[in-house]
Image 1 (cartoon, helix red, strand yellow):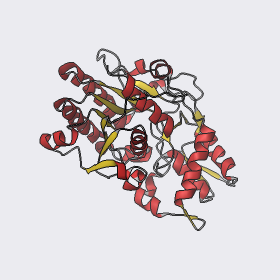
Image 2: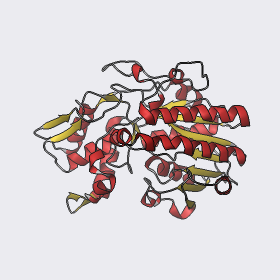
Image 3: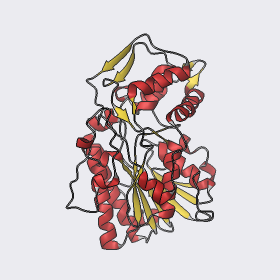
Image 4: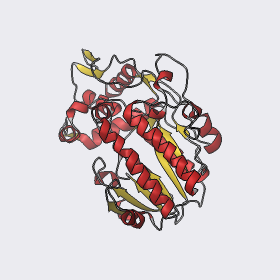
Length: 358
């Protein structure tokens, strides 16, 4: 069972950038429950205030675009905090990041501003939300591979080592890890990059694979469309497990050691779809595989040995239980008189529904 430091968070001043996002809002809720004083900085371009409903009366919310803040504006946001969790980024599912390569690269500029503000205001520690997309794609080409990506496969503290990444989004995250290390070397910045892999759970939207698959099943779409041939494999990690590991990184790591947060288990997309069908008690007569759509790496799973050894972290949710929690949330929050509220899809661009990322 995950153990947090008993008094670490009591009255600690914490800033969460991107705190109204899917993962960010879960992190905010957890930090509030642990006794931290939490501020959230978010421009609400992808995040939603609804995501903060549970903690809205216990946090300070700052609507701001960190890409365009002046240095003085940034200092005012960051000052008086002790720990920063940096999750703000231009991101989305595989459909979005493939069609918006320049936009996702803007995260590199945001990250620089955040690291600079942390250095200028003497932040004790910054935890950076990185991604499994920082790993070379040539290690992720074989279906059925049992190889798990290790942190040393992308050693951003050693620029003499081989570095590669998964399209522009991955390169932006990779280079932000490099600049984070640069801030450590030049200014003594402390912290940790945390490499998330295919997080899923409540509050995620239909631009990502799990929610897209659930949406189509709840709506009884037949033929049921799956991007790619359904054989691509991912290490699906439930959001509460991601939050456990992220909080533990803040407690235990300061020296920029990167940490993978993943279950280490692979599931094919078609198998995930079948698990959703069984949970809902419905199966389509026809499944349409659209191989023209972007799908990303063929097979991806993370080695979590370092997280276990340094953090004492273990994922608590297997995919079946995590899917059940996510499906229950989706039906509860999206169904209106037996129909899913399609306004959600209009807001999130139906052309991007079903993409994998991370």
